[in-house]
Amino acid sequence: MKRPVLLLAGAFFLVPALLLGYRVAVLGYPVFPSVPGETWEVHMEATIGQGHSNRVALWTGLPPTGTGVTVFDEQFFSGILSFTLHVEGPNRFGIWSGPLEQEDARIFYRSTLRFRSPGPLLTVPRRLGPYPESAGREEIALAQSLTKRWQSLPVPTRLDAVHEAARGNWDSPPPSEADRLRWTAIYQKLGGPSALWLLFRAAGLSVRLAEALPLSERVYTKALSFLQVWDGNRWVRYDLENLQRISVSTKVLPLARDGAPAVRVTEGQLIGLRWTLAKRTPSHWRLHFDRIVRSRHFLDRWSYFHLPAEFQETFRILLLVPIGALFIGVLRNIAGFPTFGVFMPVLMALAFRSTGLAYGLGIFAGVVTLGYFLRRALDRLRLLLVPRLSLMLTLVIAALGFLALTGNRLGLREFMAVGLLPFVILTMVVERFFILMEESGFRTALRTALGSAAVAVICYQLLNWERLQLSFFLYPELLLAVAGFQVLLGRYTGYRLSELLRFQALRTRA
Image (cartoon, rainbow, N blue to C red):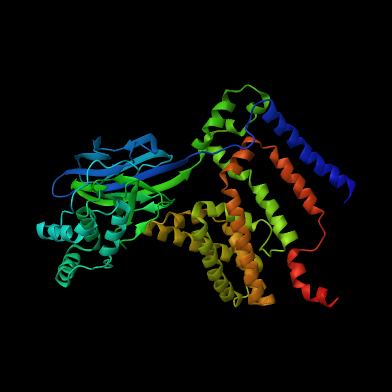
């Protein structure tokens, strides 16, 4: 390798090493910045119309305050209605009410939440809880008779036995044929969720009905209903749709507990309701932000933390794009991954941050497949290059717009974020895919598409690494180290790993 290249790469490594060492040794910066906790932004919007009178009243469950969760920056917009915050046991309800003229009323709620261990669902129960309202005396008496055999068992064992019995798997010896027939009739009358609730309560277990939103970045039009049963250490959750236990690792945002509905209208009618959850990182960095803003040191005064908040979000990701480009160079020049273009995977990875990985890959595959068939149809018209690409661009944007409208109707936030997909790059990918298909065949085109998707997934995981985001935001001089690696990579002229595998047969013969 030539000396000027080594000197340039060495300079790129030396400068960030000196600056980073000075920040750590003199200014007291952390060597490995941390991003503790999870912060989420919650939006709720609803539309209320008149019912039998000109008054309306809407109750909605709000995020709880207490163990494991902190609610701050709450904002309420009630328009022409009045707003009241009502606390009822462990629940917090927002009540929008008042007279309504001919037009419908729109209300909004916004808050920022920070979750910490052990979580908001670990509060110790004070009572066993009620029986389901649909269960009468006869049903309760039969459930108590059937569960009497388990009363002496430890709570976790009793809980598992009741769950299996509710699914029809009675332990040995099973109940009498008459009792099983009576229970089957009750099960069909009440339905699976109420029957499971009835058995848990009859077995002396603390049980309560709760409604919550799964903690993921998407749009919800209704809350998830589930049962919570106390096993002696924590609340165990059961999905009421399939009667399966919900994994402890599944995080939810509680809206209502102890059987209270998350949303109810006492007057008027609910026309539309939508909850939107989005993960946020700014407050994770508050500790570093406060420290740097108060500092008068030259390096701190030139920190990215002094940028307006709306621009910091952009630069947190933008500073990682060179890392993504470096990985693309490594995967292409050393590993031998085939891709459509050089920067397409990193642009796709940026778009996947809004759509999510699974939806993003699905949209990418769907648009490329649809675009290929459209391009094949356009080939018969024998259009010139620029008009043809312009027409393809129009069709790609139309497809993305249709997905956005579909996502709005279905409440899928990921489909509404497709506008961030690099549609120009998608248009060129469709063109390249068509040319590869015609010149090299389906196998080569598919391999290149899969290679592009794989590189985009790797870049996506890299861009979503919050500790890496904070490190480059706090130490922007690390970009020079990335440039040094890129210089060294640019002088690599050896074999690619894929070529070693490709020509393995020739090497064996030699």
